Length: 168
Length: 168
DNA sequence: CTAAACTTTCAATAATTATTGAAAATTCAG
DNA sequence: CTGAATTTTCAATAATTATTGAAAGTTTAG
Image (tube, rainbow over all chains, first blue to last red; front, top):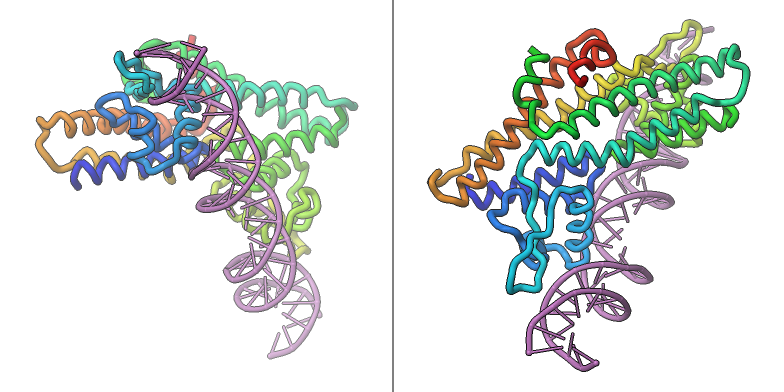
């Protein structure tokens, strides 16, 4: 496989992986493109490389900035905006984890908390069974939330180092 | 909130969460329904509770069985099949992790491995830059893969116990 | 074996989600 | 300021994904 094919394949499969995780395919492809780009790319570069419209490019670039996965890169003597991806894969993973925690896990914990305070006699089998299930999920979620928080805060990638020893 | 509303809300939000993670909303709602059901439910029960068709119910139930999240429950003196969810939330999480690892992470590692063997001069900046990125992602993925394997194999939920000490 | 009970399949259709592209808004050099 | 360059918005449309429901397939009681 030559470098052109390899890059195309990388972008294509990064997009497929993303859709399986509920992320817009194009957003992931823009991300992939910038991950393997040697220098920051402009909107026009991205449009040309991925054959997508200006609107689509703009929306997905902004969304990637929201996710902290790419940044604007300033270039003097040029009014165009250029974009560069965070290349440290540990940081990439942590940024994704941080966003998903905030957007999905935190609201879910909040909901489970509400649901666990359902009205009615706690001795009622149906209510007991429901609150038990909800509380178990909540307990698990809160733990997962804590683990993620610590990982996100950690500056270094101890995942690839001493941390792994825990897993033999 | 009463128990009826609470159950509806649980099912609804489990479905929403799922779509954000690339999982069919109905599949997650069937799962949620069975998670909070006190006894195994039949296809007709599920159809009635969620207002969905027989075909849809059947497809999603089978898929949940593939994911190891629910099982057929045998009932004597009844030709209908009944379904019950795994209620241990740790096991639920591990089954999901196991499937996603197998379906998505493993193929991605395989692809990255291929891409890292791209043709061309390794001193060429473009090729060097590309293989470096790919190798970093691969290294991270392989580690994640190992961590998951250990977690999946672990019989008990040490996540909620001593393991958490690692995180302060 | 027969037929009723039940499960599965899948083409047609509906619902959802993503993309386009042109118009509006913004920015900034001169 | 002015207007050209650039970015953003969003209604219309396209593409994708999910759902229906009836027909086909399978199972089992009698």
